[in-house]
Length: 182
View (cartoon, helix red, strand yellow):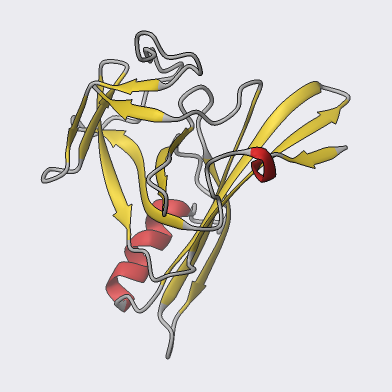
């Protein structure tokens, strides 16, 4: 049984304004989990504390880790977020899915992304990833703070479109949370 959750939430998963994803620290290593994040003091809804965000260098500091993030270009409807509550034989979990398309990119970049997200045998590469989303109403969500996101599906279109479609999934016992830069 799965139940869609965002219909009763202030965050609008269909109107994403900004998306940043990161899987590497500034020293080149992957993000270390569990992420030792803090919450904003005095918050009643456990807002994740981002201790620094350098928009020029694309570095976010959370849980003492400096993470390189990549901003995904928003073309209007190329980014979506969904969170569902699933009850199965393993208990109750929240499944968070972020899907996006990067359109009109060079063949060189398509090949770089393919190398980053897939193994030599064509399977999805397992690189722990965190994502930061902002909707059109300036509401924020952090996904992958408790349990990393991983590439679920990939699609590489080479030709007239030259685009890449990626879908990341994280399943955990916690919901996605808002974040705030302190």
